[in-house]
Image (cartoon, rainbow, N blue to C red; front, top):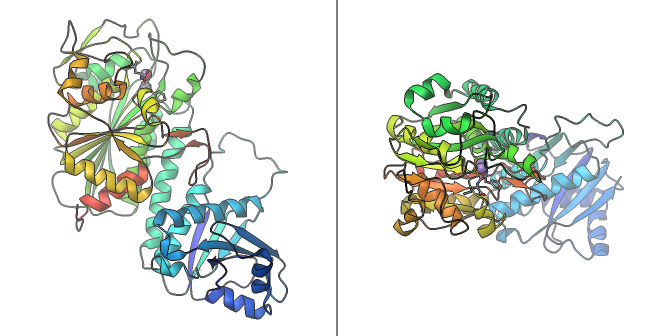
Length: 498
Ligand code: BES
Ligand code: MN
Ligand code: ZN
């Protein structure tokens, strides 16, 4: 990820400079000054190009009369109509353009016209965040190629007036949280398994987060037989990690719960070979929770938030759980295992119950790559939102809208709860085949939340992308980090209105 600098007052006079042009070809202060110095070069270039539409670039190399290597004009369109997300995406496209031009270090000149959409510093922060998110790539396991073009390493944002003190810090905190989630989700399962994942969570202690790791013996003692049943086929021991950020005095925390299946083979109900490598990211819910905790602590949010993740590996072996087995969850409910590939809900059953009993939550939000069915229903455009509480659902929807991480509400309800009735136990871990599969997972989880305000986000379709997205490269998206951080800001901070 690129390094960001914000500087006040002085305008860039060398190197590569990016300047915004509002629709169709209006020059703001910075562009006007550069245009004067270059005896009308910018106006002439824009005239020849017939103006510059939103998101389009015009590149002037060694512009006459200026001491610059390159002047990159970017079309901003009508700035009044730009949303926060539009500005982020504009920042992302600037970063990608600079990458394509093999520019290592660039300056973003005063954001002419963007001041109209929001105050200039806020607009600059949005652009910078977009640039940062888009510049993330997971290259840990690739030997650097010496022939490869240079990478964009630094972006300096020039502002007419000082940015309000904590804006840059907010950008850094969110970007770092998203990067951490993407790092975790991208790691292969031979590197990131429950124990090593739990170790990575300890890094949050540096930010002031209290981290507690529950080992196998403690999970046994707690009676987490649903979670342990999933883990028993693997040589890797399970872990549960509790991460507490006490940014406010309030007693009852918002609790964020994550599914952390570090690899999901399906177990004895084994998955087909094709595409199974994707199941290394079956811990994306846990990754998002850890990333969100990083962002929340990184910006010193004035809220009490606890993250809790259940970490296991789902493997077939001589010790693995069988279809037909019956396990007793920590809550005392008995579960008939019909399909060992419906393991995420078993892990979350115990983690949700533990959270309810021990953490005294104001509300719980879980994130899980829970079902293929949600991908059938919603594709890769939205995560499924299930909630037993209208206020929480509303706050999540507002947060989702603000950060552009889509949620679409799907149903819960008594009629669906019947789908998971078992012949032999209290409930079974699958519903009625292809009928309402995402809801079957959700109503299963609801059995363990004891009526507390709760929401479940099925992120199976959005945690990973086979295509480049406006704000993320192919691969891990980090979905959920910004959404949860925004939820905290909207509804759980000292001065929140939610
Ligand atoms: N991890 C999978 C769900 C999944 C599928 C995530 C595709 C990401 C992409 C989950 O554990 C699973 O296997 N679910 C089963 C449930 C079924 C057996 C009731 C599924 O969706 O097929
Ligand atoms: Mn599975
Ligand atoms: Zn799974």
